[in-house]
Image 1 (spheres, rainbow, N blue to C red):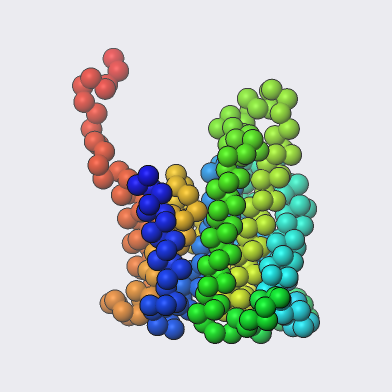
Image 2 (cartoon, helix red, strand yellow):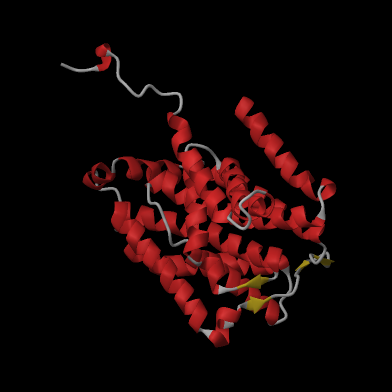
Length: 311
């Protein structure tokens, strides 16, 4: 009950933000929601199949560029752009995950890192499609069929919050499905599931598709929040931030992962403008990551008692 109240409280604060905060805070909050959803996508994969991805920026980019290209072609419906981004990212994962689903441990981390780097490199070189290093701009979409423009910051934020909370609710429901239970079992006893004749590779492949769909939605929301996308937005920095937030919230749900994303983004971008030394966002981000890594050990004994030492 306490956990449910805490999650409800955080969600309520997130929805109330545009009514009580200034424009700058709401703008930062919108970006946090998009990045937080990317972290949720990484968390979805890592908590089930125990595969830590540094390449989800690729699916994030596919969703973002799909959204921007649709906007430039005159398709300004926000739900249409979101659906297209999810579809495109899922299609990309359907191809990429054929190989990635067979990897585990550090080899998976290495391969996912390569996928993310290749995606960013392609985005930087494909000038006719992505705008290259100059990036690609997208006009504010509208909410079909109501025709409400997402140009106002508050309206844009509420759209993002609605989508993010809706996806989080859907994931919470899906976590109780037989597929989720099978994916978790594969993460715990991969070889055992193989020995039982369970289609491990196919299940992990499907897990990648689910995770990529969420990452594609995050890419669409990022373009809705910023109106712009360039190759650095899907690079290693973005993927690493998402993995860090997913790791912090590993034993918790999506709302905790998004809260962790907010803390990391504030440490990197906001605190750097208000705390000395000036312009040292990576310093504060690094200190926060170290704190998050060692905080769980604070209450543990470092030296075992005699009764705990085996003869």
